[in-house]
Image (cartoon, rainbow, N blue to C red; front, side, top):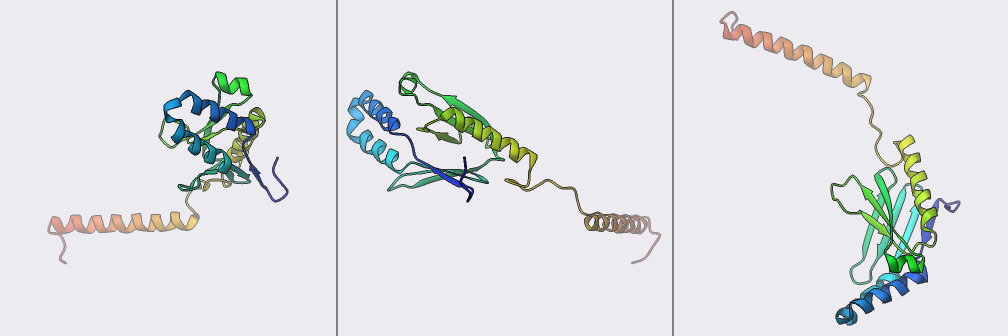
Length: 173
């Protein structure tokens, strides 16, 4: 699915613009404002998949870009309303452990949304097997760090004993 360079760019299918037109017509009073927004969103919407993660960008005046590493993705949902099902579309909602209850990223207008969901699940499993891919691996302290902490503990015990003896009046500073 990825190119030999490890990167692939996706554009939404033309049926997504048809869906946007239906949305704009349903909201008839907002049509003059909504239609230009949806037109430019459709024509600037890009998805980029690479070895580390997934990016989504859109917009002309207010450019937005979201990047998620595969290691951060926790759940994926396919959602479609009746108009989307009629057009053969679905939204892929991607959730992370960000603390918000909604999706962090929503992919829409993907030609084969089932294959994309399966691809993302495979990448999530790969990232779980190799934690160094998208996140810093959780390692225990190195041998040098353990030695330094043990030396510090010994010095603190000696300092505590010395302070205890000063309080009792046994020693002089």
